[in-house]
Length: 174
Image (cartoon, rainbow, N blue to C red):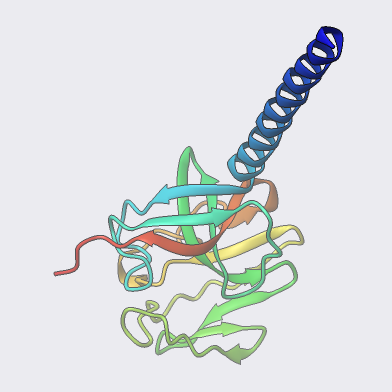
């Protein structure tokens, strides 16, 4: 009888050890998935106001299919930035004399802008977005350093770190 009790005790210990190891593996897998799938970012400037305010904390995802209108996080000239995608590969971007954005010959309604038609008028450049690249602008056009002004105006797909999902914490509003 003592032998059976010993075997049952060893079996119980091995079963509990197996459960602990299994739980640890699941926890590590979930941690790694979350760590490499999502990123937390602090908004450091007013270039995306009123959509994203200075001091907001946002969550972005590494799983994305970027299209016009999306907000992306990316690396540019050593900085980590967030802007709205205006043009994708093959698009032609221009601006009307009154400052309205034109994509592929069509005027674009932009209800998210800080001021309506606030893209500087009389930008006479035409931007032809290469494949695998993106043309981006801040929503607060008067105070955004973006594709309009950069020497290389396009964000390369490999420089994108994530797509905006939601605002985790809002900064205090005045």
